[in-house]
Length: 173
Image (tube, rainbow, N blue to C red; front, side, top):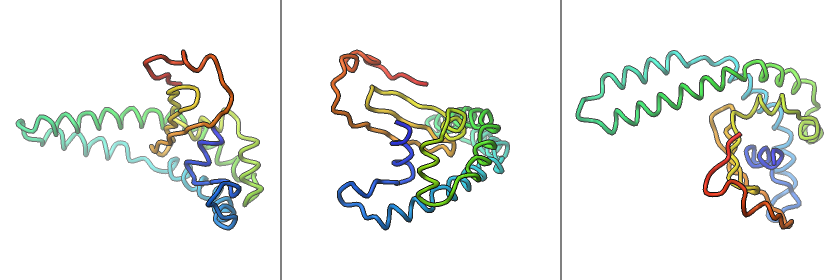
């Protein structure tokens, strides 16, 4: 599931799939580790939470009393961002360790392969804030950079548990 999420999030589609070229896949594979390191480093160095919090609080205070929907939207946005910043801060040490690990991996396709084969739960924690399981074949990954990826797994295996997994609700990890 995580490999599929990585492929979709970073547009690393296997060239054996129809319509994909070897050249674009190898180019994306070559750039994957440097781009991921840069994204992680950016998240580590960036601390705009206080500035953004103050900005949103100021906007909420300055919203006219009759603009109830706008005030509600801004308040919800601030609440969402507070939760995001808290989750991001919790992963600081894991991201620092992941950056060091990524620097040890070879570049190019070999590095991508090593990444996918060697990634452990500690490094997944550096990249992922949450995983929402909708059912055994559908997931949503909330990444450290506040993006989300919808993952649809393909399986030809019939599983009796599929019908009863998370009935009428969503399971969150």
